[in-house]
Image (tube, rainbow, N blue to C red; front, side, top):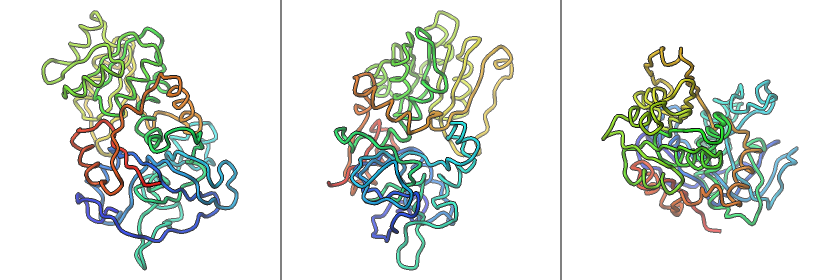
Length: 361
């Protein structure tokens, strides 16, 4: 539980409701630590506290509410972002742009303002991304619960619900690069490395990883990058142009959201070219670009959750994993649930590619 902004999380016992209609009670087996969690820890307003975070959960269904038909007690599931499944965008298959995305995912409560968690008379925000999975049990929605094969390593699957999905989906869904094309990925954390693995799946022939940390550049090479660039040693835009024979990359992915990096990810493109920005530095994050780069056929597109419909894309990633083409499990370093603050610190300082908390069976 986060009780004070910027402080370590604390382990506390809370009361949890039984699932309401359309809801699912899940016993957690694993949960990833995402940079969105870190952002809330650092910036949460007093009225958002106390809150249980966590939104890359995987576990076993223990109970279901009225009307739930897609999962049953005993099923193994991965939890992803929540969507209403009722609005025009959800009906069109663009669930990431659900009209209720913000209240369903970022507030920490149900649409009616209630929370499934409490501690005596104290309300605890416990529906973050429709799950709040930094807990031994979570109430999720049927809409953000994806059934998976029980033979899979369940404790490792949680990151498929957000971080891995975001990087891989930005490439495979948003950009959909042609076989043999070039792509540059800025920031080789878990999202960027997932994008690199997806670029390999897509058949990109030139895959360039841009990251100031040597260890991350080495990881990027292991996961399929054909070239790496240290942006502290050289101008990454010029380096990418040189690697691509002077033309620039056809595609790029910004995985950090720093204004200067977004601009570099756009300016490294050839004409025409497309940059997908998935990095997040807060809702107010002004970026200055040269309009001339857009006029000559370059595009800058914002991407949330890899433009993925979790019920379709999570099984697709799992199938690629089973084929040996998407080794996302190699990104993961595990910590016990009681080591949550150590895991958060390791993720914050880039000491691990992807931290995952595991629970006793």
